[in-house]
Image (cartoon, rainbow, N blue to C red; front, side, top):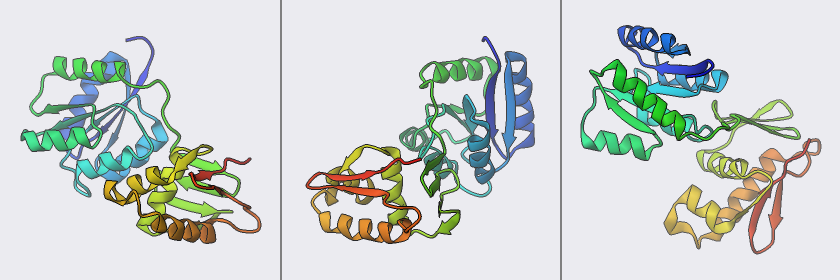
Length: 228
């Protein structure tokens, strides 16, 4: 392996973290650790790791939940390392965005081989966890939204809608795409939901100083504007 790569270990067992550090550092990895899911998400945003080794049995949240939160803004390769060996657990982790799944106990050789494999398949660029447009700032790792440095409280649905617009910032997102992403595949014709929640978002996000942020594309969808 050429050059230093960053690995983040998210596991609440100190002996496992120590073993992984002893395994990874001689291979050229710079290793960071987190002993719970929330800290793991914070470290992922701060460190921008090349690979994440994630346990599912975390003390503050299930590893699947942490993985889903991570995938809202990052495509960093994730290798799940856990004692859970049921097929249902493996399927749930892979469906939530894991790149591979390895059960404990494990061999160092297999761990390193799987880490190399998930990194080969990974995209080169990682998404930015913080989106900024004019006075709007969306911290996707912390799930916080501010307008002109003042925190704005959004409902889960409002945040889900904004998150989908942020994912495609500057591009038109169709009515059906937004409805499917936020309300599910059975809601594609329920355009009244969209009008109501876009109105809510505009009231909360658009001020005299921030200006217009959400542009309507008549008959097509909406666009989140990207402004300096």
